[in-house]
Amino acid sequence: MSAQTVTKTHRRRGMCAAAAVAVLIAAAGCSSDSTTTSSATSTAPTSAENSATLDPAVVQRLDAAIDATMAQTAVPGAIVGIWGPDGSYVKSFGVADKSTGAPMQTDFYSRIGSLTKTFTATGVLQLVDEGKVGLDDPISKYVEGVPAGDQITIRELARMQSGLANYSESPAFQKAFFADPRAPFTPQQLLGYAFAEPATFPPGQGFQYCNTNYTLLGLVVEKVSGLPLPDYVQQKILAPLHMDKTVFPTTNAFPDPHAQGYTVQTADGKEAAATDWDPSWGWAAGAMISTLDDLHTWGPALATGTLLTPETQAQRLETVNAPGYAPNVGYGLGIFNADGWIGHNGSLPGYQTVTVYLPEKKTTLVIMTNTDVAYQGGEPSTMLGTAITQVITPDHVYRLAANAPVPAVPSSTTPTR
Image (cartoon, rainbow, N blue to C red; front, side, top):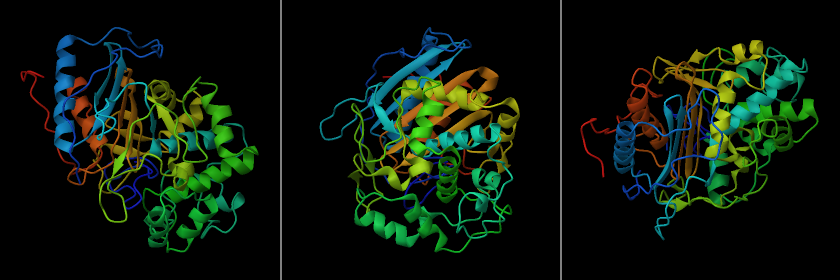
């Protein structure tokens, strides 16, 4: 699920950037050589994790699987982190800039798209724990002018069951966005695009990954807390977890170092670098930026409810199934469960991210790519997640769409490099 692409906010492949559960987005040439950097992160392992590196045979299989999937999907560069009881694996692959050949590095900042939804939802749920918001309150209690706002609940918004139109699929929004991808949008503008379109189903009677829902939830956080959403996220979520390199930008500012991000979500359909495009169109659904180390912290904190009461976390993890997704995939309150892997993905023009945690194995997986260009209708980050989990957790394979393309993962006997 991702905040997803502007043109196809989420189709059914991944919960990403600004559209949480599926997102798609034709190919650009990339180097399949993998440039490996440091094999250990600076983030201290959790009590369930081992700071040692994984078994060399597993490392070889992972290297081969990632190389093959990047070549298959034409991903220029990727950063991968795996942390669990059996050890860690932290490497960068490919190039950060196709024009210079500069390599990807594991300390890069990246736009994380719909992973932003996990922070917005956490803010709402913290306010639930404080008794200031009720999950079954109507959105009209907090935001005026929402179509059927007296019937749509906070829970339905968070679980993608409001039926409201997705502003990022609005022709009027897309016209404005492609006219100038560096122009800022306000939440009120985004809602205007959504409310001008008809609802897709009555509240609570369907499922549609929808950025509009999270724009409204961001406004709820602001109204109830009295803080701008970026400030709330910083003070109440990032600071307590010491996630010092995660930011909620209010402009197109992008901390260094970072990779160039490549997309074909352009007015003419040709590939372009979206690195400095303004992410405000994603706002509470997809604007944030983070690093591998910080997402290593966020993955288990999100999945286990570190910042919430057990009762509220249990409600967060109550999922609904969505048409087009694999039968073992469910979406909860700003979170998904894909065959036991709990977390979210994100997709914004130029970038994709996956951050998931498998409680059964106490294992965290983070993937970051510098492209959102789809391969056969599938998200490259999801395909990398599938290839990696086929190696490390074959009984729990990360796969989102029911008919997703299959990664060309080498057999365990195939030599790498």
